[in-house]
Length: 316
Image 1: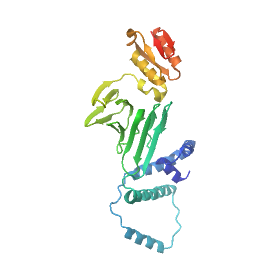
Image 2: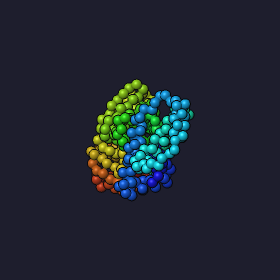
Image 3: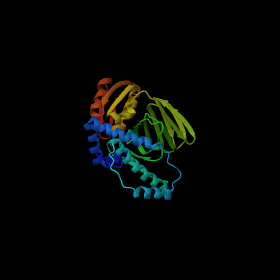
């Protein structure tokens, strides 16, 4: 595999067909993976190099002329040196572009995800994984030179599994709030002026109009952007991430909450007719396959009656 193509893959400049080709090549043999990881390692290390603030074009030209006047000698370079040299050439070009051509918006790796009826999962070049729920939009960009990983949840819902990198925090902009993490798993939903952040593992910091909250696993932060209110609670179940693993996981979860998630997942209109059923606890895991099958699970578990009408489903 050509080094230049692997570098393009690392900085996410390859298309879908090239991505599949490279991923297949990496998985084909341990040596391929080792070679890819070596290139990626050099690339990661190169990002920490601080370029000189002074560039003398005259000195560079004189040095070039001196080298040009000497006869070249045949030298055999090791594969490692060739890889490093290829990346070095790229970095020189990148630095020149950033410094002299486009200093304010240079070399951004851009990704825009939008979903319709089905969730989509994508792996970023830093190893982070984003699952976007249906009817959602998200953008992601990382400067090749600057130490930043930035995403914006434009609308809808997304689950983030962030690859840990203490030198480059991962930030998610959602409305007027900013979520900052190093490496963790969390869910964000943005809907009708409300922002919901649920932390599954690790730790995140949320900044909202000068107010800072630190979340720990199991915490749920609800931000009302209209009223400017922040409300903290906890969650016991993982129903919020049903679209990630393709299953519903409930743990002593009240029936009303299960129904709420089923309505969201299937675009249904399920109504609990009897108030005494609302807080019946459910502990189970069932697949996100069909609404009918999952209604049968609830029916068998609690001895419920399910009545189907044209525009709604009644449970009593």
